[in-house]
Image 1 (cartoon, rainbow, N blue to C red):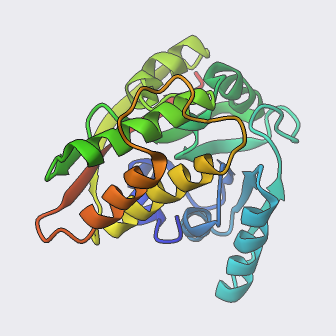
Image 2 (spheres, helix red, strand yellow):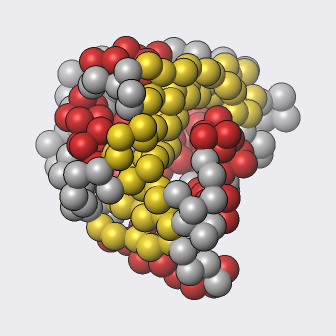
Length: 248
């Protein structure tokens, strides 16, 4: 997440931004995209919100280091945004909706805090479109297990393709949809994240792999991912879906 910028991961929403607007970034993480948004809308303000206080603290520190004064960060949930109705001109969210069990509830909250004529920009991956090579059975199973974990936690690894329909169901008057690919270079950018998530699951009491039929242990999956990350011909390209919704 530390390598993400508004130019690399939020470019689809930049044409909808303007100086002086009030913007909310839901699931801001360490704030690397948020701070880029702050520069685009200056002298407007951007507020980043995340449920992880550790990420909020990192974002605050990043803002201080960069001398950015028109961005603030608070801990909170997208299901219960701590703002009055009609507070923002736009809302942005990157890499969050794939983790949500109730995306329509989140969109309802986003719609509530948007002003009349406001807009929302959402970007999430769709794991139905990733490309990997060489596609070994071990690596393929490790990636499939990560998707299984996300679903077990209430998320949806295929939410990208559903964003336009979700915006319509949430009451946004119209929307725009686009898609793009991210190629991970070096490959370890992707494999280390996947390995970390699988290792974390392995430590959870109560057999997180329950319901998962596999010939591999979680340790073997992690080893396969890390070995693959050093393959000279290895590639991992992930599909991302982007949607912009408007309030009429």
